[in-house]
Length: 310
Image 1 (cartoon, rainbow, N blue to C red):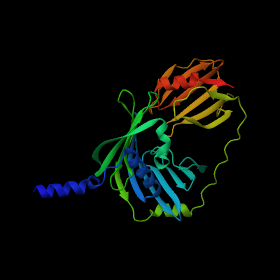
Image 2: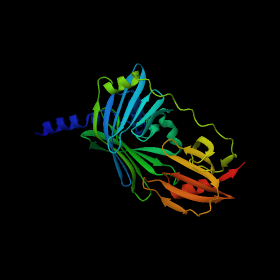
Image 3: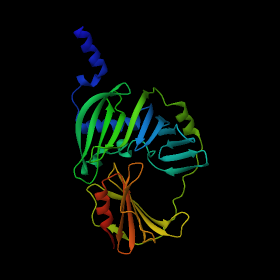
Image 4: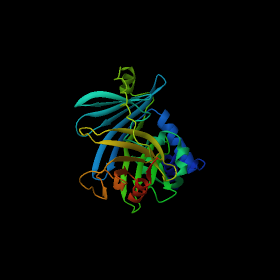
């Protein structure tokens, strides 16, 4: 009986017999798997009081990465990626395409990219092992090196090295966001829907709106690892008010900053939105700065206050 139990344990956790890998090595294996494996994942996404069931398929067709994301609740909504083009298909508007290396709204995009870029703001620590969706998973903690961001943890399937679960947790140990696989199937060939998607003539990539040259706002302070990825100046839809939009990221977390003239009505100093985002509003000179992101409110406050006009 003891021998049978030992055999079953090895079958359940095949990687126990392998040489212990570092936390970073697990993340690098996960990155490689997300880019190269043919698979189907059924996923539950939890954000505050929102629960969304999703299905995600990924494969390689004619040497191109192809992926398909379907939202299972509510009106039909899908996203298809062929190479670096993502097309959104919704029931109430024409399909449209953008240029992007990943479909947003699933696993953090950095998980399928260069893990090294996270090391400026985080350290990687091995956690325990547990079963998720009936599969053994190795947990990796992604711990911030400062108080300016939240901790994350990801469970990596020990057989396929694909992600099984992702949690973001705030400083009070409360869950901000969770992605959990409820079924993972590795495929021997790309799913038929991916093969068909690669053949389709999808809508052309939308031309980005022409940038109106605005004022040169810059930050005197950002947490280590954060950098600017987008800066745009435009009028808000349905309004004559002009705003400057600045997008920041550290690879794992995105922060949006909006700069506009002071409004007639005062806005709240701070609030937590329903999807786990923090938002702060600061007055800098004669403008109002709104910063939004899944980081501590104190971080957003400091970023907003560091904005200067060069």
